[in-house]
Amino acid sequence: MLYKQLFELSILHDYYRDKVCPDLSIEPTPECSRVLRGHRLIVKNKVNGLVVIAPVDSEQKPWVYLADNLRFTFILKIKNQDFIDFTDIDWKPVDNVSYHFSNENTN
Image (cartoon, rainbow, N blue to C red; front, side, top):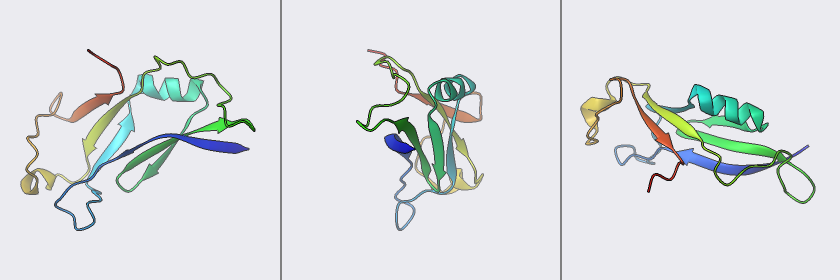
């Protein structure tokens, strides 16, 4: 079976020598998980983010059609509670736990 990378989310932070930030994680929301499963998309976690891949045919087209308005929403979570002590990020989390990110165009 052939796979193609659709997109990648990476967290970079100047505090780390290589800018790879292992202290945060990105997770799909429950709704996004349903969208991913429904489109046979696979999430591969990495140290500082994730990669989403899709099964494709011999012409590199996804097996399941991906609409232009397909929405992916993710949650950014802190894995290291000390992260707030050494970052300059103005951390104002939603629900006092996480940030929510989406590819939705809100213009």
